[in-house]
Image (cartoon, rainbow, N blue to C red; front, side):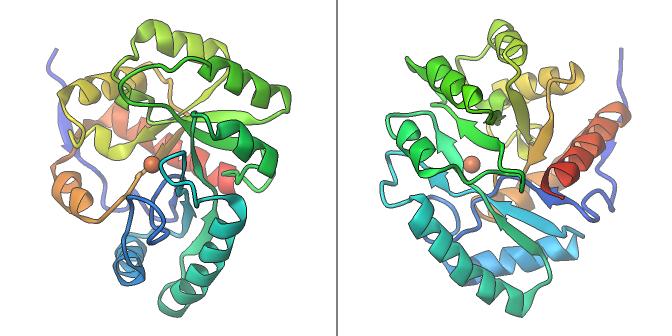
Length: 242
Ligand SMILES: [Fe+2]
């Protein structure tokens, strides 16, 4: 049946909180400089965003990123940000489920929530690597709540994988631009399926730069029902970070 799709409401991001972005400059493949990152923050503030959780990559590709060094860089960045905008900044991390993951667990996770339980995790896009379930099991035994970043982006993931993850009580975080085609048509299809079936718990920008947002966001058209679902995810974000 034909489904009428419309633009996102103008006020969608009013008082919104983003739980996944790479605004902390110069530490990964996200924003390269403080200036570019602060420019993006100001643009987000114009759209009504009031809180951002910065989630730099913690993975073997970035061996210098650990809890101590990233916390120090975040504190410096926060001082600069406070001079130019009123967005409240929080620090967490996006943890790759790789050979370094358990070391980060030992150091203490930077979590999405103040209560210290929600851990943003990602896997390789191409293949489900051996040992991932065991790593997640270990952190859940320590009462951490895994939040799977952008499950729609994993090429190996099918419905069986998603049901298995949900049965294991993993939480799901949607990348908004996945719905707009920023990562290709197969990702759009997986994101639409997961959104329609109410798999998602949270939503993030996963912003690495402004260009994707400026290119894809104006193009995004969603059904009224899916806009309602996105609004609910934004509410969930607020509760997580309040
Ligand atoms: Fe990310």
